[in-house]
Length: 187
Length: 138
Image 1 (cartoon, each protein chain N blue to C red):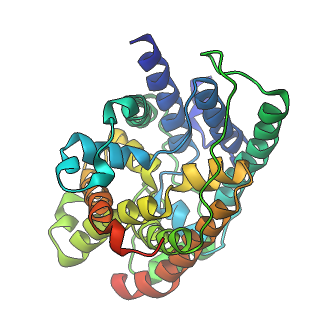
Image 2: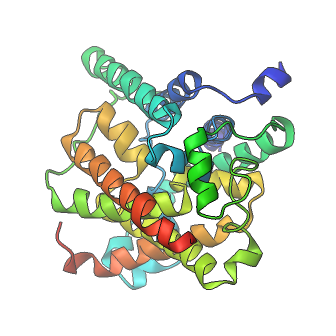
Image 3: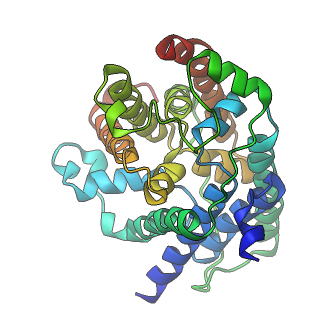
């Protein structure tokens, strides 16, 4: 059983389980949206003193902080007991593309060590990618009012056209980064 | 307290799914934006298809939550600029760090401690949005 669970879960298992996550949260009386936890964190850190946007009862959002704490523990459990020693089976064209950008052994781990490590953090590129990339994620999700979970999953499931606009925006930004900015940053 | 246990448990479940389907992998996100594999489209697409069906059923049957209240959905406010501009900025970040907020948390738990820096960056980004909000087109 553990051996089977340790293999890669195909999309037709993962997608329905993500939908299930959303439905369980709805049944528990909550909405599935991870990026709100960033606003809650700002509020808990005292951001209410700097902007009215953070003046709300953040303790009412403690359930979502508990949810993401669980998502962290889920990663830990998967790493400890469900790890798959096989590399990620990436498309050959992706591997070739990333190798041409100087990334070694694409798919050997979840992340390339040359960008996502403490050593890499102390280089201009590493700092820009980790801190700057995180900044864009936090700024963009709140500006757009949601991330992949809130817009792509919850919003599209409820046939909200603003969510479709947001998802189109995700792709405009993502494709620009992948085709124009990353090749320049990495080479 | 009991209710927090259930949110924690659902979170663990979600984190395991994100890890085992390799959704937390920077490589899988690159592969998605390069249109080289169906994997991520299958994950998001099947979640949305089931989500649409389930949401329609919840509304039609007026299903109730555990608290006994009819499950309701708040419609998103109608506008273009905030969704488009915000979406583009998030998309740039998503492709750069290869992780949206859910995977950021899960990667830290998986053992990639340096992703804490990404989390700090995203908290700072949200904070900056709060400060600039009144000056941005919505």
